[in-house]
Image 1 (cartoon, rainbow, N blue to C red):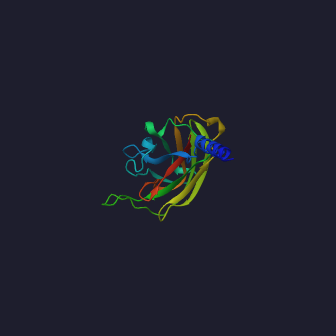
Image 2: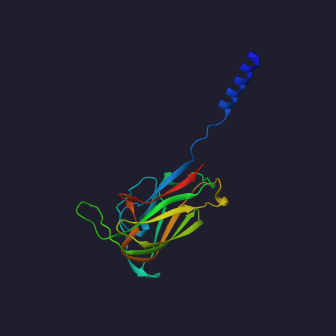
Image 3: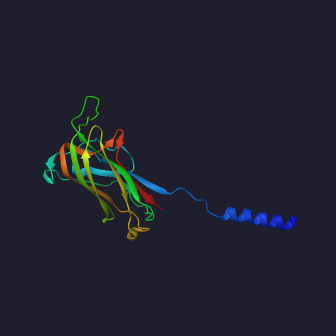
Length: 193
């Protein structure tokens, strides 16, 4: 009887050791920023926060008309691409929108309340995940835009070549921008394998 109990106990221990441990889901965090001087051609998504100097392009318009435009944030750097997606989970994150009113002597950029609206399109490898419609008032602080998008099965196990977040402004005043510094750091969490 003791011999059988020892054999059964040994088999249970061996089976438990052979089973893989359930690790926490992996993800890649991408931070909004810029790769140098201010301008729409240098907006970026990188693996480190507070990239570049926070800046916004002057905008003035409403209902899609006026001096508005699109700020296009794309992956920059080797670490921001190359991993494979887990399509069973959602791409999530938070985008903070602010209206900047100029720099202070300490280098901080004060913000002001202003109406804002934007259509935010997120794409991976050229495949659109969705469009988020954001609208509200940017101050005091920022307009917080939650991100939660399903990744299509067509991207299953595909290496990420590029992630693009296009912020098409439909209403804005002054230097309205996606915030990427201080307490309002905009970022995405990309589920990986």
